[in-house]
Length: 360
Image (cartoon, rainbow, N blue to C red; front, side, top):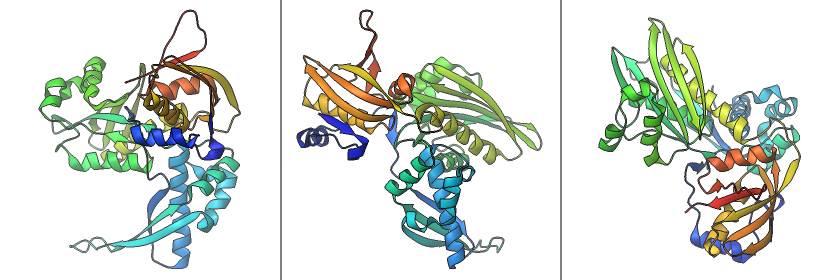
């Protein structure tokens, strides 16, 4: 049995696909992004020249989301394509935003477009860049903002305008994010002072209810009358990275932090910046007890962009043996599986191979 990118990642044979549809596969800690190939941009008007420029800008946004790279025009192949975006477009439409009631803002035109995923992917591969797949880790956001001497966590009904900035920035980068509900359960588990004090263990414990394996904790405050500063901590499994950012506009500082998270995760989960050959590995997955488990395992592996080919070599007892081809090597595979919530690495002293356990 065999599944590969050349068959659009559909698991064969048909009976296996049917089982996958019947039993499903609920991913924990990872979310499929459904609108990667859509974007909306501001245009001057509805003229052909404005439309062509707008479609180029929208396609650039899509390529950033699909690859995880911020500057698609730095690649000559992609830059040429952005100058003539028509062949990539599936559909487009306009909408107009009304002028402000006080007349301070004139009406604005927005152009929305969706693009052909297959043609866009081919362009990216022709340009030598990697594709970051639809299955991406969900990021739990614990962001505390200090204003007028008061520290508040974004989420629930707290600071909705700033929460919207985070969500919009994440959507632009194709990054699934979760903001806390800030209900009684959250309040009993975590306080703003815990995030401010960078108490990682409490932050991780409060994130458990959201099944998050990637967590961003931040404290943001006014350093000077015209300068905001933020200290950010990104937790990916057991790995922790920190950085500090500054800016004169709070909303831009928060948006830049989301960009930094997307950059870090794209480098980690999309693998190298350019295409590399796939390496072959023998893999054993234990805990596969029935056809539902079997379908769930293969469906999950086939959905990972790092994996270009999956072949079943043996099914015995409660385990399945596979031969897989992975871009980015062993570390790339382990990185993406650690946050997928479907498989867990399983180390046995007498077996140096790659072994995983199917999680319930």
